Amino acid sequence: MEKYKNKYRIPSTRLPQWDYGSNALYFVTICTKNRVCWFGEISGGVMQLSDIGKMAEKYWLEIPHHFPFVILHNHIIMPNHVHGIIEIAKSNDDRGAQHNVGRNVETQNFASLQSSPSEPSEINQPKNKFGPQSKNLASIIRGFKIGVTKNARQINPEFAWQPRYHDHIIRNKKSFQNISDYIKNNPANWQEDDFIN
Image (cartoon, rainbow, N blue to C red; front, side, top):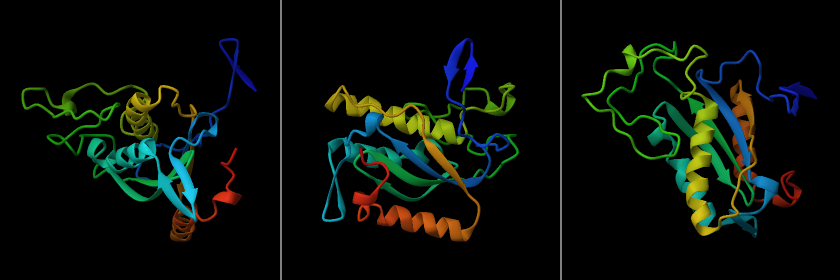
């Protein structure tokens, strides 16, 4: 294990040469801390959402409202994790002018922000020298997790996510279909699931 500033750190699971802000299909899995079943239970092969599970479902479906360049595909809220396919589909993928000026812009806590006509255009603003950090897969997942956490803790202050998430870049139609089927069939296969404690 590598050290950073004299502390051990877990190496990133991200593909090093891949730009996670680029247009692509991503299969993500996000788990609750210690895989606690906050989102409900499986009964007869069907997911029964708890109040926190309904909240997770609601905020998942709202992702495109906060990140207008996102298209959602199959997803499932499971008792202790979320599976979903997120497509980043920017109309301008060269990191130049933002394609959604004048529409809702993404926020980290799922609170709506409107672009104000009196504000200078984002086009003229200096860009982060490390690249935009608000228009990539990590920022989408971060926004979703923050939105769920903030509201779930009003129901139970103990709610928490694992700090990381798993992603897989979907590279062809066969892989997309296999993953879509896996997501759809996940509740029926819960007893064999790797995410059971």
